[in-house]
Image (cartoon, rainbow over all chains, first blue to last red; front, side, top):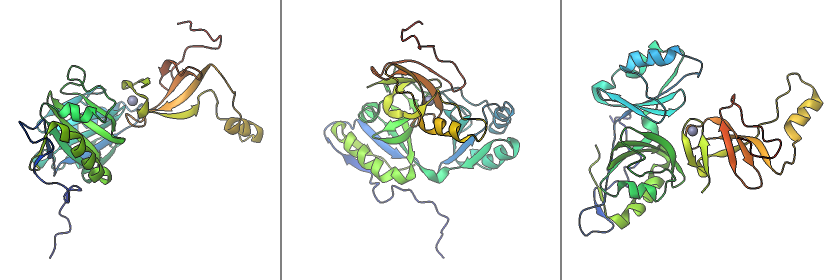
Length: 200
Length: 95
Ligand SMILES: [Zn+2]
């Protein structure tokens, strides 16, 4: 029997580990797809003061402030907008979390959207330069710092950026745009020399 | 590149935003045909400051208000939907 429940990356037919672009010296940017993540989208009314407390109890810590990230015990919560958050988690930290939030914060909309995004980790000294070539957000390391998040445009695709540290940014793009975004990304990275790493 | 200040996200590039219409019209309470005609179709043809609805489409997705000079494209202020914009009816910057 085939396993029809097995998840497949939208990038499967284009994702090839190895060097590309300028081949001399160290690669300026490393790209690695993060697969098998659990993404939980939460939204509640602005005038609902109770839901954020119930969500915090289920997650284990308070929701982040505007533009910020909160993280603990393998659960990373990104601010998406007023009264909207995205939880990134995996493995045992993800087990039952969506149901726990939904049954605790009964007035919030809780949706598992794990299959709806491709997630790429860009790292290396030119990771910010690659993104900046298609993104209007100020990505200078003194402005967009570790622990900050923003939804913006990257080459006309709506992209969620998660700043991990000075040289590392995670990019979330809608799954249906995955291959198109990938093609833009590879072309943008060529001038710095790139390396596709094994997916995680 | 024009920068627009989202009340939640701060200054962002114009390309992240969508114009969503005149912020000075108010939906009629009752079903009066003439009032609805005016609400849907009739607009002032202003040349200076105009209160507008905008949406941070590629960001937090929220609607907000902006006071924009339709000739120079200068945006003097933005506010949350229930917030206040400066009164620019005299045509001068008073703030
Ligand atoms: Zn915004």
